[in-house]
Image (cartoon, rainbow, N blue to C red; front, side, top):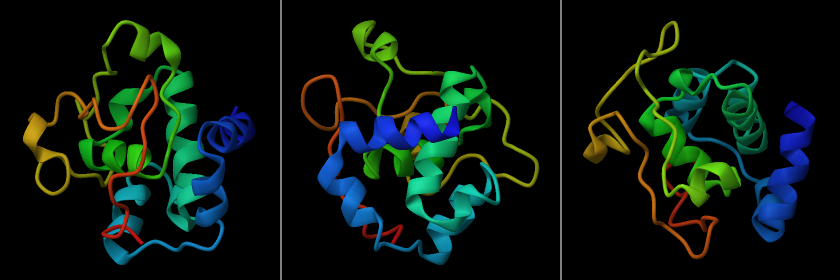
Length: 133
């Protein structure tokens, strides 16, 4: 599943995916990604694949609002079933072990639903990933 999300990420945002091959995470970005898994904290490509795997396996409660913002900013694909209903997964209900909730990027939605509507069409485009690199 994880490897399929690398492919989905590349097909969803190929130029961004290639740019991310050379992009590291800041300490803040690494801390956010580490709430998903230690492997997600290695780089943004692994962050997207790990979060995508959580979405596909219906474990989105592990995804904090900050991690969701990072996923979208890095060009993570949003499943068509979510965008078709104009709905997003409920996230951040319970932080992962050692994780945090609220505050920081994405706090404007109260930690319940990720921000939507950034980008065009059914997908998302990058707003700014500078704070995470």
